[in-house]
Length: 279
Image (cartoon, rainbow, N blue to C red; front, side, top):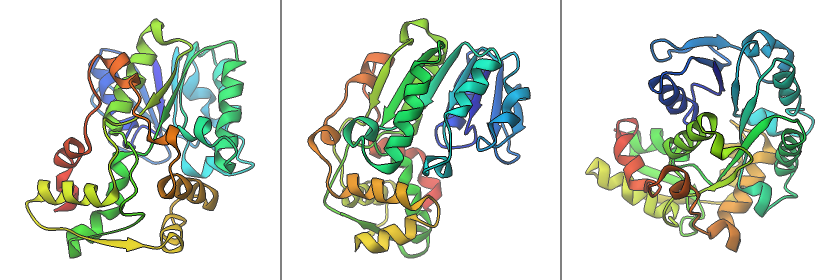
């Protein structure tokens, strides 16, 4: 049995589906009740209380760990999840980490993630670490303003990074959970091109068949909006990358190609598949 945390999110949902379609027994974990694919067991649990995961992990062979935003804050203690998994007999863990662990190791939230990676490496379990850059699905932050006003409001409109489709992250995670060849792998996951927020807005407009105006936000305006849904430290770390990506954060990784045998999906593909959210 494979346990997927964050199972109702942009990565967890397609991962859960992929594992179920591969014929594996899956337990989907999220904080709240949610619909899951047929044959998948759902359990409501909070990763902020790892002891509550004991009955979920009992009998599991593998675990996918996706930490919610509030567990990136200082003092959250997410490494205890690894200990609970080991105590429950889990053999393999795939951790969704962040590209910033390597490219900006001293950002407050990166320090916490680096510590989790370290605990995982020393756990004695089989493991793989996924380090994605920015997510294409972050464009869903713009969904309401596009639906109602045909406007994208974002900072750093002409500064791009190689964002990744969460469906690609899910496919790589499934491979790491199912295939022994990926044990000990650390995979940097990016999209196939550097793309700016302004060009993302253009791709959404093309998929809509309707013009979308771009409005530049200041960093402070963007931070205030982001801080409503994530810790302030995570908002700061994210804006540091979006506003001034370093050479490592602009590099196009070949890891998706290596694991999946195909190129990563472009942002325009993500926009076309998710266009209903913007109509």
